[in-house]
Amino acid sequence: MSVFLGIVVRTLGAGALFWAIFPVWLSLFWSVQGYPPTLRDLPRWYMLGAFNIAPMAAMVLVSPVAVGAAYWAARLPARRVFRKPAVIAAMLYMFLTPPMAYALLLVYADMWQYRAWDMIIPTLVRAYLMLAPACGVVGGLIGWSFKQ
Image (cartoon, rainbow, N blue to C red; front, side, top):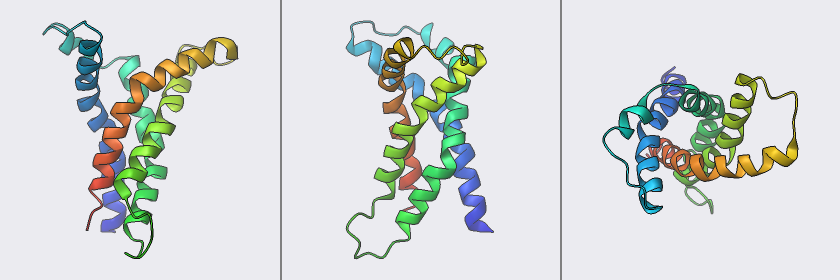
């Protein structure tokens, strides 16, 4: 029962952890490009809206796969070559969450039925650039929590 409860807590906590980390990543992202954030930007970035809820929901939807893989990696014998639950969870969150969040936004905007791939692919690449680093940090923290 405690293993199941731990997986459920990590699954739901992924969304909350993303909500806490993503504005910090946005601050760094915009600062590197020469647009340092002001104090007025932070409340807007922490405000719940479609562009924050979609990645948080995507994190929760991807979590059973990522948390299950990290749990499996943490339980492997020590002689195995690749036994890094933090790296496995970070990679799975980084690669699976942005397309899921993008699909959720398309469904929310009622645009999914059009599927104009020539427009979707460049926007999806931008979604990876914006979301993947924060998703990787969240995945790394969740995978790190499986250390014994």
